[in-house]
Length: 443
Image (cartoon, rainbow, N blue to C red):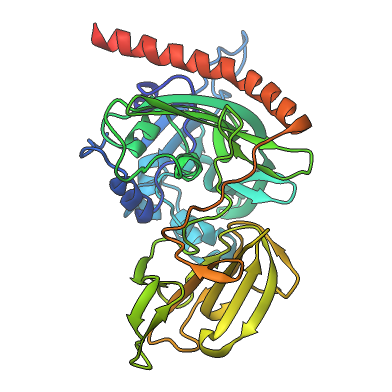
């Protein structure tokens, strides 16, 4: 598909793969704003036609079809899309409404594409809706679309089609002028890559408070392509983010043991041995220390931190560990105790239910789902009671100096240095591009 006029005015270095497709991402983008962004006009329609000259004596009406394309906007109906594409086939809208095999066209996702091929008489050759532009399957990444064709007898056929996407390595660079998502949009980064960037450097940069106008990022990531378009995003391979003049780096490295993670260019792990919290998007309802017990009405010591959250909120392991206990235990209700490493262990209480199949002796990794927030045991409302223990003695997880991950050594260290040497020239090239763009803009 040829890029539309709005896209060609953006960065020429990469093809954008994803637009914001849900209101939640717009809320996230707003949360990461530095100043109020200016929303660019949304591209909604594009068309192209192959105009190869026919050989001498050929039928002038045998030219290739005219390809029209439009992006779905919020509030669009199927009828709106057909009108924009210039399709007026008798019975088509009725077919799409009643044919079970064509029902996917009524799940319209803003930002995704609908195309139509028209012959030189304006008749529809085919209609295609790329409803799943990049989906993960066991064999890799596939692109899926619905294809509608006339059957030659006044009716239509509908078929779902898929094709494997081709992996590529992509690079991008951007500078924040309004918000992180605004800069990522200008750099034509998929939203998934932007969110992954926040996750990778979240322990180094507070993306809610610390971003400044003029901050820059440079990134190398995996993308999956189909027909010249990005249809899915993979993993970030290398990353640099300059925040308030300080450069933060990250590179994905998988050691000899097969366990991968992100490290800065010096080899220090970006993942601490422990996460600060076991659930996302929550609030602290009770801190570590002395308090009046909400049920027993006695002044007593609170051995953990309570995180208020709706029932069913996922709970994640704050560190690698082995399930030492899983089941019911006194006032903790449904509780899991993880033996992490050395002298450290963690407890997760009041759960509504545990992760499916999890049992005593299982090994879990940091970030793995282990259960769901509930109100079992001595609890007056749904929340997670979280304890951080050293030598089996609870300590305040919000105040403790959490252990850091072990640095790379030996053969892993050498392999890591070779990997960084591969990505450093790409980062230097992107830095030069940024400097050149800034100099041109300043003239």
